[in-house]
Length: 255
Image (cartoon, rainbow, N blue to C red):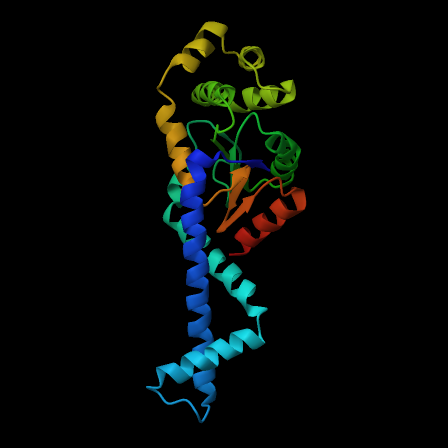
């Protein structure tokens, strides 16, 4: 998985992780305390806060394995809440930046960078899934965080989306290997976009709003790099592979 650059993400991500950890301990203490009170230990009265806190403290020390379980559960809840609160923005593609079923019952959203090797490695997994699953929709969200070439490639990509030539450009640029001005212009040409038009898109600021919106969404989701996938109420970081993606699709469809 390609890491996100510290200036753009790490401050927000660090604060989020601290809040999540503290929240997990609060959740754990409350849950353990409630369970112990329900058992009615003789030494604990309804108003004896100190006694309750001591019992919870001792319980956690005796069962430390519940700490990562609680943190994982809290994180999953918060991620699901964030996805639900932003689902329309996450799952609504920019123009034609999608493939598969127009009204699929499950949507995979990929935040990606054309310069990300792990994103390239995930391309066959997504192609296999959309070929096998006729109820699946894949939405692609440009997250150009690695280089100036990433941003230029993303701008042409969004232009291709407006012209219903998104996937031809997308596949051609990944197939070209290293992202350079020449390879992105060649990929554009293969998708029917002439050099002058592609260069104008690179120089234009008209796609900046979409790119910044994708960065903001990735921050809300605590994305730690590219690729990042959103499926149902799950956020998967990294090139997790076909099996993990398929399992997440099945879980989303089950709900």
